Image (tube, rainbow, N blue to C red; front, side):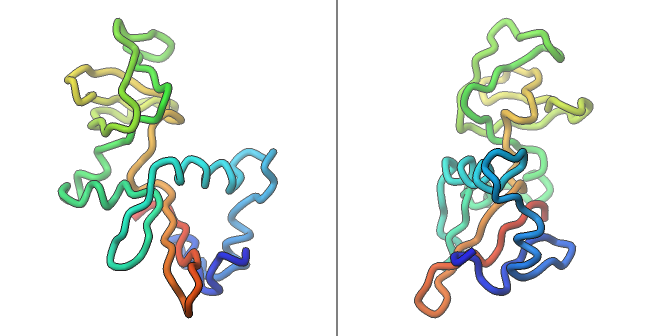
Length: 156
C-alpha cells in the first residue's frame, strides 16, 4: 500500500483512494482473484511510457494505431494457449504464438473467445489464455520524487 497513491483511481464507478483500492483487491496470495496473480501477469506483458507515465501492461500503447472501437476486437494470446475448433475439441494445429495479437471474431461462449490468428487460422481460445487490451492496467507516476501507482483499472 506504500506504493499506492492516496488518490489512486480504482474503477470507472468513481472509486478513488487507498481504502477503495484495498476493498477491491484480496492481498492473500492463496485467494482467487488476488492482486499478486494479477500483477504477475501484467508485469510479464511489459511497460510503456505514455505522456510521461508508466503504463503496465503496455497493450493500449502498442495498439495506438487501432481506432478506439477496434481495440475491443483484439486480444493478446498468452503463453501455452491452445486453439480449439469448439469447446473441448482441439484444432488440427492447436499451437498458438504467445504474446501476439489476435482478432476477436466471436464472444458467443461464456468461457472461450473466437479468434482469427495472425496466420489466418480461426477457432477458440480459453478466456483465461487471452488478455484484453482494456483489461486491468496500472499507471505509475512520479509524485513528489516517488514512483506511485496512480491508477489500477479495467475497462474504458
